Each structure stands twice: as structure tokens, then as C-alpha cells.
Length: 305
Length: 146
Image 1: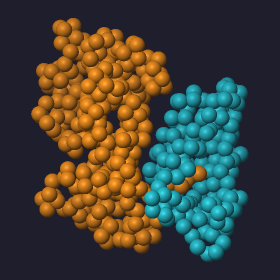
Image 2 (image 1 turned 180 degrees about the horizontal axis):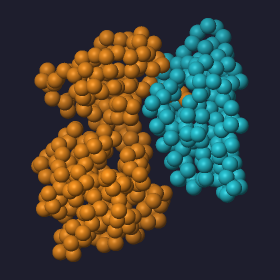
Image 3 (image 1 turned 90 degrees about the vertical axis):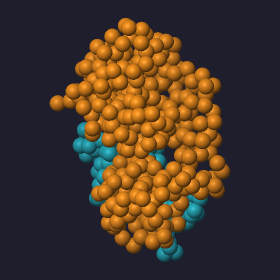
Image 4 (image 1 turned 135 degrees about the horizontal axis):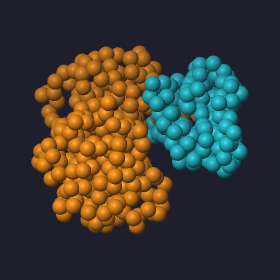
């Protein structure tokens, strides 16, 4: 049996290029720290926030269970090392808080392909093919290697993963781990993510921009393989579609493309910015990769309570 | 009893309250949401709740777990009605037991607020004039809820 999986949000960085604390940025209607924490909490038995000693009482960070760096100044590997020492029997799903395009689906894919026999399971960078240590599962067996790496005066977690032959996976979505370091990148990411980000475009344009950016990011859809997917409809969409579900063959690569296609067949009036998406009964992202056999639900504005 | 569940029949708060009893508890707070006879200036005759149950149950459990963790309360639960409801019917129930009352109030408030905003549950109102509409969905640009 694999060791229990705990979550660790790395939020100890100095954010010097951003000139403000990256953990406080908002793309999804809440601070990036809280968003990453919630994402990990969905898939981990327990979740913690990694902090440097002087960050423990900051209002944003004080709200969460914390793991305090034992070798502050060593960068992210200090946080990973502290977690592996604090709970030596747990494996750690480590995620940096500056990954606004990360999705639950990407984490679940990593967990599904985890190899507990290696010291870590990580994604290959879509940019250079090297391991991405800051969205990776670090097994309990990594503890000795991390401590030895630090003792040798080395701090780069990526080099450690290369040297220790971590299990490497291809990203289900090449943009998923794009990180954000500058004010300019933050602006571009906020626009790409559309509604929910602060600094967003005026609401009359938000839907249009989100649509354009998602289709611009996707390869030509003629080259996409056709897959069979199931779409379930609820409430106003069920009435407008005239059915509660349908199975269809589509070349759409993402929920955004699929909704666009469905709008040409059904009189759906709600814009994508008014909807959320669920993939296989979990909240998902408009840019998630659709696969053969997936079940998709478009969620109209809710009104429970 | 699950931390969050749906009911297709009338809610029964007494049966939901019992599992929250705890000898370490000094406070208990509950919140009930009732079907009222008007909304946004229109007379409501009855309404229907519909839910994407598979996702709402998971997200509802997460909300209750978050409340227990954030406010350090002892126990908490939430039950939401689905189906056809009449005026005065109980639509949602939340209960929290804790060592002291302040945390119970806060956790109760957190759960009902998050349930309203996050769970895939929809409400169709039937009005006196025979018209009907899905709350928050019928008028474009009026997204969100609460």
C-alpha cells in the first residue's frame, strides 16, 4: 500500500520580481494561497502551508496548518525537507502557490500515475522536458536524499529529481504549470483566466476574451481526435437542451470548445463566464483536456439554500 | 449520518440534531432556510430544487469539513431538500455543536453561506401569475447568487 498522501503549499518565496506577496494574488476569486490549499485538500489526507519562521503570524498564512522551514534561506527545498521530517511516514504532494493554471485534474493525473517505489513522481516541463519539482509527489524515501542534497550545499530540487531518477509524466495540459513571476505575467494570466481574477477586463468583454484566449491556445481542431463524451444537463440548461443528458462524438479538446459547439445545437443563452464546469463529477477548468468517455456538466448560476 | 446529504422528503431536524450531541459540547447552533412567499417583488406560490447530486454531495462534505477545521468545532452537518416545496417548507438545515457558542454560530454561518455559493443546486420559482423562472439564471448578466 502506498504511504498516505499529505499536501504542502509552498508559499515561502520572497516574490521579489512581483514586488508583492504572490500568495495574496487572486485569479480565482480567492487568494492564490487559499486556492492552492483548497485544491490540495480535495485530494490529500491533510494539507499544510510551508512558511519561513518569520511568516508564521502573517494574517493570510496564520489561518492554515503550517510546516515551518528548518533551513530558511535554502529556497523551496527547505520547505520540502521540513515536511518530510515533520511527518516522515507521509508522502507529500508539493505545489507552489504561483501556478494559476493548475487544476484538480492535473493533480489527480499525477496521483493516478504515482510510483511509490521512486523517491518522487513529477511532471516533465512543457518548456524544457526537465522535471518540475514544485508540482510533484515526494515519497517518504526522499527524505534521506533531500537531507544529503542539502548537506552537500545543494539547493536545486530539480537537480535532485534528475539525479535520483524520479518517475516523470507528460502534462495533460501543457500550460498547467506555467508560473507567474512578474506584474506583466500576472496581467496576462488574469486575462486568460477570465472571470474570477481581479484586474479583470470589464464584464461585458470578459466572456469574449476568455473564449478567444482558450481557442487561441488550442491547436487547430481539425487535427483533434474525435472522442465520445457524455454531457449531463441540469436546471435551465436541461430545459433549453430538451434532455437531461446526451452522448455525442466531438472533436472539441476542452470544455470551452465543447460548450461553443453545443451552443450551435441548443438555444443556450448563458455565456461561458456565467457557468462553471465539472468533469467526471469534480469541478474542472474550461481548459482541461477532454478524453474519450468523459462526462461533462456545465453548471449554471447556483441558488441553493 | 453523512456530514452533507440531500432529502427528497420533508426535513426532520430532530433526527439530524441527535448525532451532533457530544459531552464536550457547551454550545449548539442551527440554521433553517424556509421557503418564503415572495422574491424580488413577485409572489411565489411554490418552488422546485434540483441538484447535481454526485458533485454537490462531495462539495458539501468538503464545506462541512472546512468549517470543522477552521472554527475548531466538534461536529457539524447539513441537509438540503430537493424536489417540489410549498411555502413554509424547510429547504435547508445546518447544525453545529462546539465547546463554546461563538464557534458554533460562526461555523453555522460559514456552512450556509458556502452551501449557497458553491453547491450545484438550482431553484425554480413558480409565481402567482403562472410564470416561472430559474433563480439567478433567467436574466443575462445577473450571475452569481446569495
